[in-house]
Length: 345
Image (cartoon, rainbow, N blue to C red; front, side, top):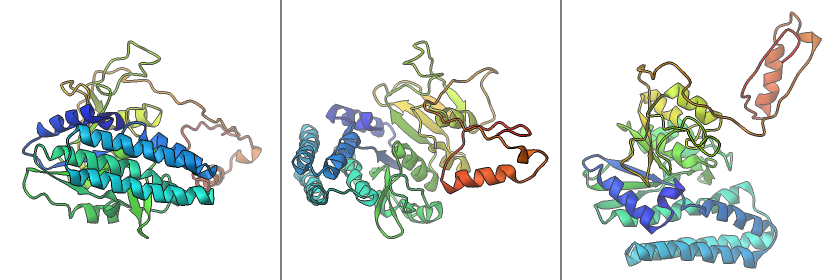
């Protein structure tokens, strides 16, 4: 997550965590530095407004932030030059988009990818202090459709590519970008906010990992939102189905799609705290061993739209619900809950 790579001290903690996994083939999937994606989204808005000076000023701020982290970590000149080159490319793109006063979904994805590309350079450079590090460019391995801003992974094509990833001994550490991929035409895509966790699960599943660790800034999955209920406690273990429900209905610590790739190969997923790496965390397991009976957790969603459909044509008829859900499917709308009676949906 972004808070796990937000600055030089956070990246040093990441390096220490990775070092404790010595003896395993290690793949580290990174998010953009904290708040960088938000800055890039704001940059897109500047371009759409034709405010090139403001947009270019944001690029300069982002470049200096990344370079400051690189220098504080003592990274090689080669890595620092790569970071500078990345933001030079971004500057050219932003200048062109600002002149056009238009940012297409395709251009926005290309621009947003800068966050993960930048953090992967910093993390890979920092990991060289404990071994050999190399970058796996997710745009060459995560194959998606062309739904920019929320692309869907083509698992068959992605698995064929990721299965080719090999390690040159256990000392080598691979670093990949979360959140990004490419479509069949070679155009950069993004998986939607929170997509880095999902990327980690995709990589872990395709590589048949022994486990997938999601490092965030909390000690695990809590029974409910601690901002609303300060007495919320950490759940040490959850079944996949429970975690899926909590994530879908608003548990912010876990992207809803994260655990689904791991289901096929029954790979355990751990939620851990990079700021408190000794905490046990939460294990999401596929074991039938369950916690004692009771409520595991409470989640909620805001801004839910309630649609009430009343029709006497439903009475004793068949196929009515199919017609309703065909409309939702056509508009790519997901239905959270449904209740039916003879004449109401």
